[in-house]
Amino acid sequence: MVQALNYLKESASQTAGPFVHIGLAPGAAGFDIYARELGHDIIGPNAKGERITVTGTVTDGTGAPVKDVLIEVWQANAAGIYPGKGAVENSFRGWGRVIPDFDTGVFRFNTIKPGAVRGRNDVMMAPHLNLWLVARGINVGLNTRMYFADENTANASDPVLALIEQANRRDTLIAKADGTIYHFDICLQGAHETVFFDI
Amino acid sequence: MSPSDLIQRDRQWHPPAHAPDYKTSVARSPHNALLSLQNTDSELTGPTFGHDDIDAGDNDLLRNYAQTGDPIGERIILHGRVLDENARPVPHTLVEIWQANAGGRYRHKKDTYLAPIDPNFGGCGRTLSDDQGRYMFRTVKPGAYPWRNWVNNWRPAHIHISVFGTAFAQRLITQMYFEGDPLIAKCPIVNAIPDPRAIGQLVAALDLNASAPLDAIAYKFDIVLRGHRSTHFENRPEGN
Image 1 (cartoon, rainbow over the protein chains, first blue to last red):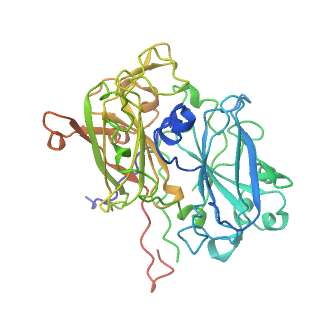
Image 2 (cartoon, each protein chain N blue to C red):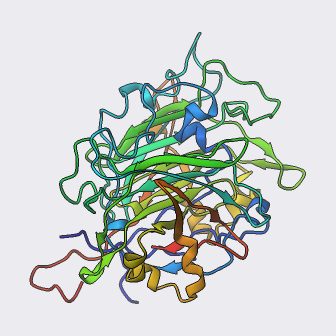
Image 3 (spheres, rainbow over the protein chains, first blue to last red):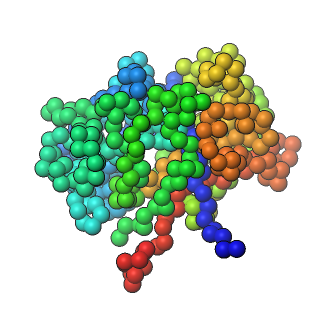
């Protein structure tokens, strides 16, 4: 008999359910319970860099907006440094929670454009936001990234975008630029299904 | 130096995205294969939280929304540890929970179940694990409730749990169930998990030793986040 490996197994994921707001954004669920809700401000007051707004919708396989989705954002600062990895501006957390309008399904959040981040083997990754989606019907939270359409040169050499075998699908990770407003739609299924990651 | 890569997520242990008996998953599951990425700082770093973010009473659901008295229902203590797959405690990490009240009704404007709202129960709480990864909540045992999947589906009593860990790729939301509940075996959401051992890991054990006599009954629930592969050795950078 071979020896047992003494690793534990990760707890299996379960859907966040339709009422994820109760736990993670109770103000949106319609009641005030905490003095401070978490995730409203991604960057804090002192962040350097270009202020941007990101807006879009998450749609399901029928084309309907997913109005009950909760998205978490994780990003580096304008210098390409993640909090915890190096010095960042005081109160820059780089993390936030985004929920769409319950009626329209449109989400919108403010942040700064992150810098390029060093990837594996010192290859630079183009500026990007890391996104994590949970909702009713999503059994394991979905990871993806949002890149910026006005970073063509950096995007062209990004090692993660380059891994997408079907080059026509790379566009699903690139937000369209309209001044400082970026439009980024996420499709859970369909012809324009967003590329999601197993990380 | 970056922390070492995470242990690969076992996709055969987790429920698949497309689980036809859980109908909502049908239109919300990606059809294409996920793109497998080796970890970078984007995955190996993650947000941190401190005592400035939360209040001491945020983990007491018996009190944190009480207006006129205690919530109705069976008083419970929920406690356990946050560990990683290497069996090491995950300290100082944010644990958030949400749940229905004892009647099975959520305090949410979209919940229309006919069981009453409890004026003294909000249904959410949060805490930071201690230096040994331990966490604790006081709450009431949630009720089972019906949901529109098949015509006569009832969710087993459950509490939703959200945990961070130290890396964005450790982010996890799951649900804990209660030992002895006959509805667990009948639930399409639970049964989307293919391995019965993985389901068992989501069932909290009755823990009389941790109960508060004549006050609250306890359940113990450990949460396991992804672990890291072997640590990086300065003298062995090639073999980790």
